[in-house]
Figure 1 (cartoon, rainbow, N blue to C red):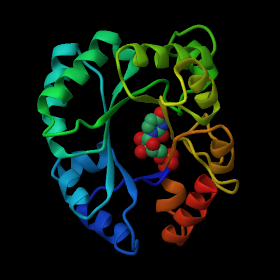
Figure 2: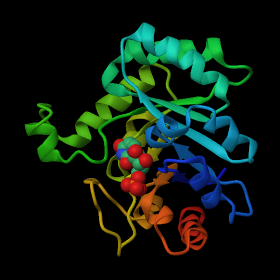
Figure 3: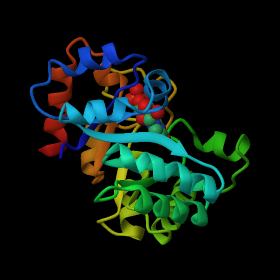
Length: 231
Ligand SMILES: O=c1ccn([C@@H]2O[C@H](COP(=O)(O)O)[C@@H](O)[C@H]2O)c(=O)[nH]1
């Protein structure tokens, strides 16, 4: 499976088809809120049927019973990875796994937890969110909770991936958005890194959206990034 997950942050099925058409191999894509809210959940089996791997990034965060019911239904779609917010706590994450086990036809999707969004800076976390301490300690703590709940890994920034592997083990997945090429604008992202640094830090997967989707030649940019990650 490819180590580069392309965020399909589009608002129509047509844009998805236009984007994927030039790729002559299966790739790993992320379907998030923008696309799901525009096209509905049917977009997941549609992209799977084209042969691509899917990370369904809906970041569930609610009381355990609601998350369990939600995951039971998401499990039927055939996504490879689904996720929740670690801030929902250990009982909520355990409930997510129960729902997946009940709903999956065959192997359940991997389930990972978002730690601190990559759009959150140290200053924001302390002063707006009211969480004291360092981002890295908060992310490590959330990762340990996710592991205790039985999840398969976390979403974090590249800057925390090594520390998470140290405390949670090498098998515990680190999926890292906030990827920017040196010439890119960082936009709304705060904890950013290049694919080269992600590779150096041992990230299992990187999530890349605009650097690929808004590039003049998305297929070429995708392959350049994949070469770095697989090299
Ligand atoms: O902490 C997080 C969790 C999820 N994301 C998602 O990843 C992509 C990143 O897109 P870029 O265009 O490469 O910035 C996007 O779909 C986010 O919803 C994240 O960025 N940070």
